[in-house]
Length: 307
Length: 322
Image (cartoon, rainbow over the protein chains, first blue to last red):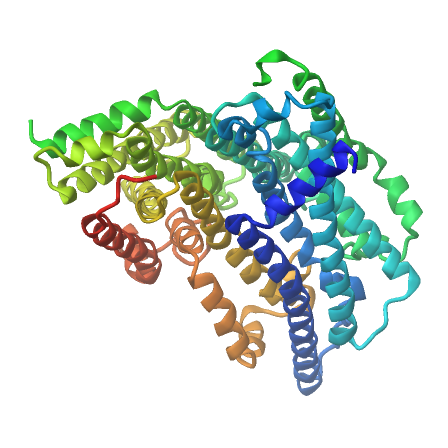
């Protein structure tokens, strides 16, 4: 077996021996599965409420409102939140002691005396993490497809399967981007808890603070426009809020995923290719930091002070 | 100086030397200033625009003027609720975990426990020292907020508003205290400090993000932008009639949200800051008495965890081992 495969295998095995990691894996799987149930319960409650509204309108002799549009994949839309929240944290859990752990245990020094290149350690760890995240998302995809069929009584068509598969690929890229950034931090920090908390701060910023700042700017623009009564009274995206959001891969991930999982009605029946074309900038925003951190990791591991 | 005071003083000095604590604190203060200044400026723009309209109408010789818009100067703290929910909680967890783990790692816990200090005095010193830090942070942010609102927004602010604001910051303090005590409890309970930190983060993830997210998802009115019931052209009374048919569903949804101290903090915070409509006519204390369940939801878990931390810390012989 070549060295990369040995590293990957070791990463895979070690991760599944860690009880805390297993807890978060379980949480991710549980929430991903529960999201289908929550989604279908909410949608059926919404339809029941609509029936009540129709009965009420008929008894009062008033106009019957149009039925709310429900798209099949929207039932699975909660999973977007779980990938953004738990998925990213899971990737941080996986990577925070990838290097600092080896360093603290003294195994890094031992590894570097063996006959293989340093970049193979990085590649092996990436392959191992990729296998873990990939396996997790594959299980989630299968569960979701099964539960979707059970909950809706519908068999997903080719376009829906394609959308769901593309969402999972995107989720994989998103989670790996957090893993790669954490791997880099782990290379650079001596204390694993410090590295972990630094990544938690990064996660908070990407997932919550930047979107909140964009939201504040949107509301501010709304206040300005509503008092001057010049433009629409509904808060909408502004150029500044869009630029702020470009700094957050989490927002970009949510935007593309919302299109893929039919949360947005305007793109609910678009082809997968037109969704990719529309969101190309968002995809670049997710990929770019990943590539940068990957290059940094490969260059950092060559330095002597990595020990 | 009494042993407890020594521990308190040491906790504060240690925290001020903790790089991570200082990074998170710096970010929290920066974000608070940005959000409060922007919020206050937003109120000022609305007020200026209204005053200009009145001057214009006066110049036209009009004697009747439109009512002043609802300028709620307290709403400038809206983003602060989210920042405390995220960075404030993380800050408190870091403090709580570090306060116990650093003593275990450096071997000082063993040494301290061999001295003439009771274990409960030691733990009290740890909790109180960190609570003083959290109180100082909330006090400073409340002063920054008050000054920004008064100076930037120029909106009239009553004594009632000031009381509401201070009570809101008191709730923020209670919220952070919960995570502090959680951090201490898990660091005392779990021998491995890193594992304790990871488990604290998982619990935070569940109670601060997952439970509120499930509650929000299950909220029928959240299903469409602008509200499901509004899109159906329904008024509040008709909406209530429909919701009455979903009592079990709504109770389940509410029950899920009640399990989260973050949701309790958000509910009582938004009521105090007049962000949630319906509390404008109440005094600050009336709001607290209406929202007593949310205050209890913030207080009770902290007290229970504090007691549990005592039980573990006083009973376990190998408490100093990592």
